[in-house]
Amino acid sequence: MIATAHIDRLRQRPPTPGSPVLSIYLDVDQSRPAGRQRAFEVALRARIRAIEQHLGDSERETFRADAARAMRFVTQYEPHAKTLVLFADDSADWVWSGDLRIALPVHVRWEPAPYVRPLLEALDEHERYGVVLVDKERARLFTVFLDEIEDEREALTAAEVRHKQASGTDRLRSQMNLQRQDDMHVRSHLRRTAELMEQMAREHGFDRLVLAGPVEVTSELARLLRHPLDERVVATLRLPIDAAADEVLGKTREVVERQERAVESARVTQVLDGAAVGLEQTLAMLQQGRLFVLVYADDFAARGRECPRCRALFAEGAGSACAYCGEGLVLIDELVERLLERIGEVDATAEQVHGEAADRLRRGGGIGAILRF
Image (cartoon, rainbow, N blue to C red; front, side, top):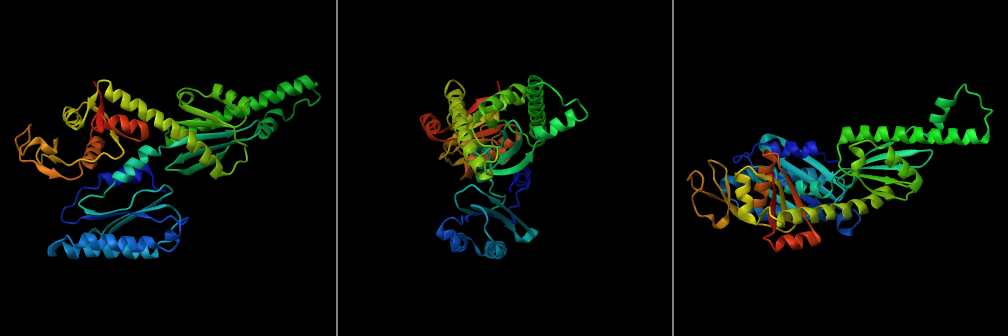
């Protein structure tokens, strides 16, 4: 599994123009015939040949060493996910790999820094969330990240709570007292479940929580959740306590995706209702330190320019000199990628939007920003 910490370290790896990194994203899905026939090896070789054809003699030897190292890894690789992510820099004796259960577009790039934009966008689209699957007797707790269950725990059962609390007591109670005691034990079970979920939230950090199980149980559990966990509940579902992990993942994914689309729509409304709209305004707000959330449509792409002295970014038609320091500007083919790198340095975040939200944003230029002040 690829963790947030892995992506952070990849982003922090200093660019090495004299020793580029080969970044590879391959479709290795074994549910399709092409994946089972290892067509991804053929695809990688074709991409490598295409890159090599555009290199000069001085670069070709270094690139071939990186490509050979990557091919050795891929030919020995046994797929067990949908996407293989691989970075290789032979001159630095460095190879990094990870698997994703989500499908990402195929990319092969040879650049000074690892190409992490697809991972950053996957993080945005498949954010970590929590799940509590509960009934009156048992509770199963999950955290889901990048469409994988990363942690699953079983809470103390109500029967165990009852045994711990009732040992040594007079068992000759009236039926009414027994029911009252059972209700107390179930409540204790749910309170313990809420405490464990709070602990998992502290360990993993997530902003969305799904409660699943009988309505009367999930309703009581929701009342027992303390702030701020109670505000993170986005949905309740009916699921049996013994539901398979894949069923839990599939059912909760649907509601979390709907919630994500709603958040994206709200972000776009914020942008269009008076924040920075369009590429030039967005870049200006970044330079002023006011950019808080970068919002862009899923297919937005743009070329631009960068100042090598003060690192200011500009749209492609901004001219040849930096408007802030006068230095000559350098052309950038992937402006969004550079923006994503920059916002990580200024404590801002990014939101890639899809569907209806993306359509609305495209009418405003495809990109915008929510501002700090």
